[in-house]
Structure formats: C-alpha cells, structure tokens
Length: 111
Image (cartoon, rainbow, N blue to C red; front, side, top):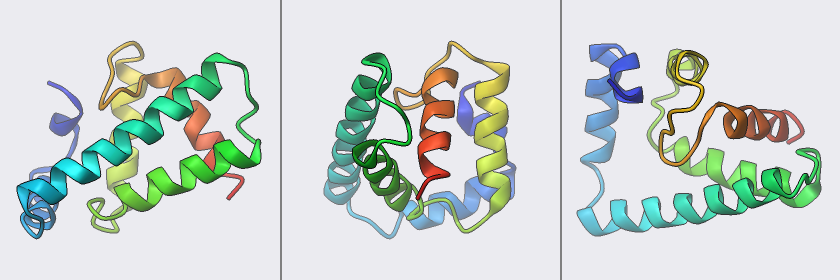
C-alpha cells in the first residue's frame, strides 16, 4: 500500500492540492534536495553520529521545512507516517525506514 495509503482521503486531497501549486520542475528540485538531506541523515545514522549532533539536527530541520510545504498543517499526517513506519519497519518511504525515521524524530526534538 505504501505510506500514501495511510493518509485519509481528505489528507490525500489536500496534499495533492498543495503539490499542484508547484511546477514539475520545482517538485523535482524539492525531491532532489530532500533526497540529499535523507542521504546525509542516513550516513550520520550509519556512522553512529548522535541525533543530538548540531549538524544532524540542522539536516533534520531542513528536511522538516521541506516536508512542511506539503503536510497541510495536519498533525494527523505525521501520525499516519509514524504508523506506516511502525507497521512496516523495513519498508522505505522516500528512503526512510523505521530506524532512520526514529533517528530523525530524535534530531527534530532537539531543534
């Protein structure tokens, strides 16, 4: 089902409407930036860098800022993402599995 199936139809519609505000080129650029941030966060995680490390916290903050463009200010969106990762610990959504998700969440808590 993927993470998308964990969002309510209303959340999906709102997120799609937000995505429609961007050109395909802008969406591609945003995804590229997000992928680089995720890659850097994964490297930190795999190298055992503390999620409290300033650089890791800064990367998590930048990732969150990009995600906030689409999360429609709905706390249920983050809960759906968390539920997806909890129920599918090894499945990746945009390169993030449960372990990396938790690492990023800890880093975000230090922002």
